Image (cartoon, rainbow, N blue to C red; front, side):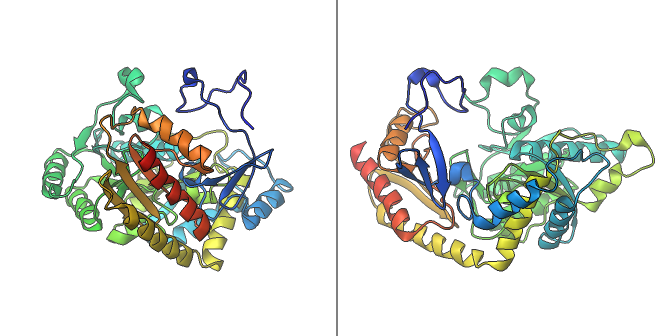
Amino acid sequence: MTQNPNSPVWHPFTQHGLGDSIPLISHAKDSKLYDAEGNGWIDAISSWWVTTHGHSHPRIMAAIRAQTEKLDQLIFAGWTHEPAESLAAELVRITPDPLTRVFFSDSGSTSVEVALKMALGYWYNIGEPRSHILVLEHSYHGDTIGTMSVGERGVYNRAWQPLLFDVGTIPFPHDGQEQATLDALEAACRQKPAAFIVEPLILGAGGMLIYPAWLLAEMRSICARHGVLFIADEVMTGWGRTGTRFACDQAGVIPDIVCLSKGLTGGAIPLAVTLCIEPIFQAHFSDDRGRAFYHSSSYTANPIACAAAVANLEIWRDEPVQQRIDALADAQAAHLAMLSHDPRVTNPRRLGTIAALDIAVPDAGYLSTLTPRLTAFYRDKGVLLRPLGNSVYVMPPYCITPAELAQVWDSIAASIERV
């Protein structure tokens, strides 16, 4: 079953002028999506990287139902509630000690906006105004004005270039070019920017570009040496995707600010947080109301979303989540290895549960004509995959079965034969 072609819905990242049919999903369970006629698709990208334990996880659904009977919404400026208090306390417990404060928002983009405002607010309030932000080449941090400014510039944001602020771009550390990245960061940090923001270990929308943990650690050290705030955007990389709960764990890195969303609620409902070190909070702490941190949204720390996140953290605590992640990572590696020697495949790569490869075609890039053809091919095979140009990646929920994962990779192998 597909969406009515006369529907008034305007979909994101969708060119409606192409007339592509849009599946109408009625329900989902574990790794599968279904329409009303019973057709099913394996959700091989976790519905845009959010679903970790599987769709409609019973513990998270039960927490949501229970919370709807108690408190649905509350202004969070000067008021609080138990789900937010419990969630914040547990987040502080499971993250490194220097991260002491939790600021709530409602999406990955807004968590990054909060991080940028925290950084600039810190420098302003301590009497050393700094406004320049450093970013890593090919990054993606969201689609709001601030997050587009600190992300890669291209077709997806060229219409809004007049609104974007200037940043300092550090070259991506491709193999053999790591020292150039470090040298560029060292030089840029000498100019006393406010902060450096990175996606730790892997750049998602930039093409699933992977760099080593030692390099992340060295970049953190350079920032610390020059007093530059280090922001880790763990919106996609957090909650096990890279093989550990947080990507920074693999490098022994403690950010000054960290952004979390997507898997924070197991992917069930929107919620985000920005954690920071105590000095950033203290720079805003005062009896002067003008020094307060002026940021919010109407649904900040929504109680139902917070209850879902509390349930997610209980799943991490009570269930063998890490074993599931390790098993999926091994399975992904095995499937990727079977295609890695195909001459039509380039740059096979994997980090934790994320596996990706590039299909060798002349028109690579985000607007490659290959992309819509591949997407439609996979959909006909009963698989939801959304390639990034000629880059095909697999990032499924941790509950995916071996048979389902095999179907995903069989579809990828068949698509390589077809195109």
